[in-house]
Length: 128
Image (cartoon, rainbow, N blue to C red; front, side, top):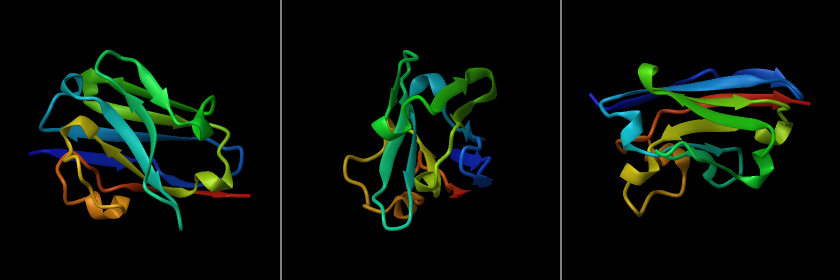
């Protein structure tokens, strides 16, 4: 069955670290770019980081130098290492395979859960 299951979220103080994991089943990681999105309270659903099939990576400006995306094909798992966390990083984080999603998606991250290639999300809360 096709599934993306995130884990690793939690509550930390500012400056702390978390590592999110996304275990994928039903397709191969080397067959698709993989990405992490997030949506915080009152924010838009936004792309945080992307790892392409050629191994190249992309980070949105507000996480550059703090977050690192990696993947382990042998474990079918994508990771997001988050360091130097800030209160504004508080959000639900979602794993997805963007190249396999429809071009038109709901605005809210949570409304994309019913789509294949989109995970259920994991909550990250950073306190000051």
